[in-house]
Length: 276
Image (cartoon, one colour):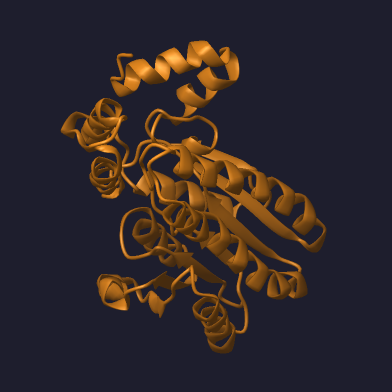
């Protein structure tokens, strides 16, 4: 039986690292991608193949897929995990930064899907896993550009699922809730830099405090819960279209579906500590 091959982007830490290890344990030949391959050395104990890849660089992505096909002759799983949160008031965030947020979180994922689909169609099998967020279904103040990317990736995934299914290719969305990674601290620091001294300073301080608080970190789920959901999805004969996992994801998405917008606004303001 041919060993199946997986590509995991953003594999140097957090969800990506946990996912790469989990897929390797499930018997996949795993290529772990990151901009800096030196940060992938810790995955050597799982025989994960390091791959230098920048999801904003087309040549880098094209070369990466060509290398995988050259080494294994196939690609069975793509996990689009690379991404970051660019926080700041919509008014304050420079458009160059907003565009870069979309390049990383949306266009990089879409381009990799374009590159793997011809091979998956030829195999008549494969799974593309797009990691969005509960932030692709709900919203928070000062996260507009980040939420915009996640809402966009949700919509793209739904369309791609319909397009790819006749060729035997599954498209799965993973919607993490709060996860214990370095993401929150980085987003908080960027938020303070962008909006900490503007008209939105009081909101920025409240949201940054929440993002970086120890209490919030303790509540968050470990990255392994996401890796386990991905492992379940890519080994299922008929995977679910969405897996909502991690702290707060299910109740918040349900509340957004259930409540009128202004009622949900009030919940988010209270949760983020914004008082006006």
